[in-house]
Image 1 (cartoon, rainbow, N blue to C red):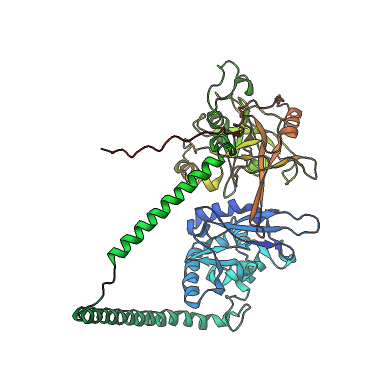
Image 2: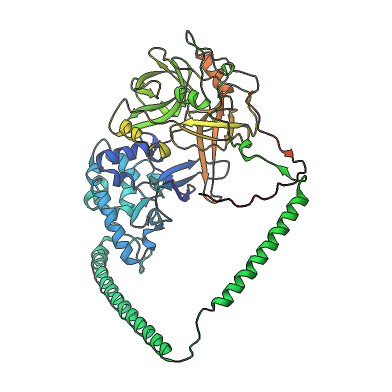
Length: 558
């Protein structure tokens, strides 16, 4: 199920909570991994995925929320009372396994910060499924450095029971808004709300039973009345038939004659237009490169001591692009990368920056198993708009064909994005065995999407950025964006989404500064400068006038 956009939170008056010096929102994968491993998938599925858009000029930053829910969500407090009771029970059940973790010295601070919901609107539901937005935020800017007070004041506190630990234990409990009090009600109102929740299901069940009985009697009355009318009509002589077969046959013949006349008119118009129509072959107008086209030896680096590569662009990418796995505290950071030499992989710095440098691995179908790598070059930071690159070294050269890079690319050039986005790869059985069962030989399938370059931009720091239309999401970071010849033109790095316009954008770093940075660290890559020589799409042609052949007579099919 594709993720559904739930809404956007403007950060103008909200402060993101921080743990270990980083906003909790940026630790989404870590929080989900802790919840999945320690409290189960139901707890992990509660948190909507945040996509943070940084502040720009006078405009504040914002967070867009996404989740794989079956329909449009609504705030819990806006649901009917009976649905509120059911959803509240489901939320308490999902949080039951989380309660003991909130007192855990290692994971407790992170989880308490994550469960700090900025407002009651952050608890949303659809079809009994609960999803949390506005998490990891506080309306009190002074509370952004800590987590106890925000959790105590969070609307989620009413569903945690004994889970409010530490400073939260002494804080007043909160419950959802009620019709009488649209704001937070004190904990003393909880017993009355519980009694109402118990009585409502009983009342509704009696009402439902009454409606069923009434429907049965209504149906019986309609059937008896219909039978009596049919018997009365059958007993009366000279009753007219309800269907005039002769009149219907005449109408059908008239309709056939009209259809034949219309066909003749269409045929005459078509002949008149012959010779003045620009014919386009849809197959010759692809959105992206032909992944089945053979790769030219001139577009890939010559392999040392190995025969030249032979195969399609898809074959080239399947052996030259890798899945990057970097275990971190309480989970794993995942991304993509690609070989630039037989023993060097390039990726984004933000994919591996929080990992132990001695516990970073890559894998693809050619390698066949998790292969350890170590960082040999990293940019100073990974801020959006700054150069975000890291080079990883294998212990020994692999039997792969490295990808070439080129600085020759322009707007509307067709491109392919290659990588391992979690939203798509999570349906792959091998992806689950690798991440959740530790099967080091489970190789996920490479995901390929195509599109075109939208623009070539300069970021405020001077980095060349290329927005494009190939679909990417979390996990594509560090993966290559290649042209129609299979040459790397950019590194997929970040995305942004806008709720008001229901739109998203994807950016890749152009390889120019990437090549220069790697050269300064001793990783020499020679970019190709020639234009891609892939066959151009067929051009529109004006058809010559022609007389259509006579229509063939129907033939038997036996």
